[in-house]
Image (cartoon, rainbow, N blue to C red):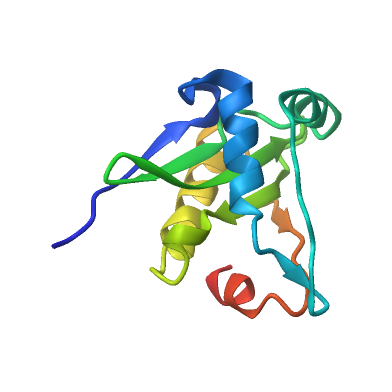
Length: 138
């Protein structure tokens, strides 16, 4: 049976910043870099500061739902001159391996353009060199 993928704005995620911070933390569970587990814990206060400091647009940032369950999210930053950048991209561990990174990346680009990114500019994204599944998705 095909799973239903839908996207909502991070700004309207049920439960507000607390729930969004918990989802952000969950998407980075089991995150490895250079062969070592990198613990990530984001609080609502951390997320609020991050949104301001990194110019994150939560209206542009998608949360991916699979059959109504949160499965991943992207935080998108937008600058005044039309540059967009990804400051966080994650899939919940229970949904990894289901090829959800590609539709989430496509939604990220679509939303960045919809919210003011200039197509002739670029979208930047950082990724650890040994995160092969992420590199494949991007």
